[in-house]
Length: 427
Image 1 (cartoon, helix red, strand yellow):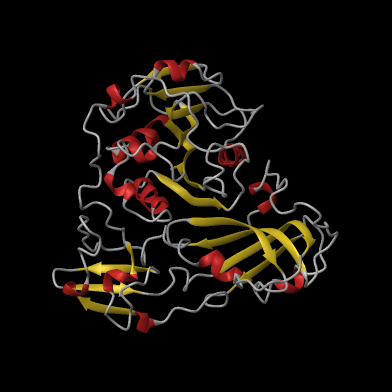
Image 2 (spheres, rainbow, N blue to C red):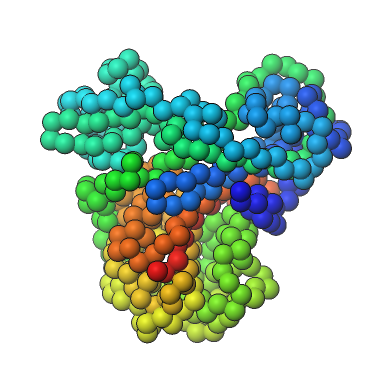
């Protein structure tokens, strides 16, 4: 089981959960409020997956904890970690074969979204409204379902949760405890549903078959201007809030071996590496000379347009690790770039790709914008899997942390920017 304490390194709850006269408590009880961090770990045919979710205001009287975990989360102090390994179908509804069925291609409502024609593609997820009117599905349903296969006349639809046939390891860490106020109704949260609904599981292939991300002009972009013109002016801005950046730094600290020579791909003025890192030489490759020169970590840097020329200007096996932070969505030749990363990495060297849900819309590829957030790790997984140059693939996500109070988006978004990562080791 991945240690959720490491996943939350550098995280401070601050005043997010408690305020005013609310009384902190030393231990949980059935009437308490608390903040907990949950970790969901599972295995697909191609990778190990770890998805973290922070629930900052759980009501232990009203909200429903997994039955198997609850006894180990009551009468416990801050910092306590409870774990349980759930068999297939134990935490959530088990896989039901009758929820996987064939429909005529005509049953898929391609023009459901105005001015946005959608074709069903194998392995992709869509809101159930796209097949509303079939099998008792209401036209307004937004829960996702998967197209398993698409042929000329039929589509195979799977309404099961994508984790329904997976064994799931769950851990919960108590972050904070305080006395509940007077009850005035409110909704009941099911923690198992919070962890598994509408997201986790989407990053894996359906029964080992490659997901069809490649039709519908996936690498087209809104802006037709050359990248060199778009990036001519420096943008000394952060592309993720401080909490999200700290999570990326913590992840890099755990995954990058000490003393590694690291290539920071598609780099800018900040590398999201931990302060006081024990890495070796760090080399930056990006689009703007002024941004690269402002990065204090780089021993050297170069300006290079990977969309114009995906070949990396380095020799074979030059690096121990390569990182790509918050930029993979801009690659129009990702397979070529990933092959080049494999070339410059030594055997066993690690390639880590991190991203969030913020980007420059004119420069993101068409496929990226049109998919669910949890499908994006699946797209990056396909980049890793294409040539068989990487093994030990893993995906990782972190959601639900509080946004810094002084962040410019704090009045609009309570949660920190989510962080997603995919990594693998050179074969």
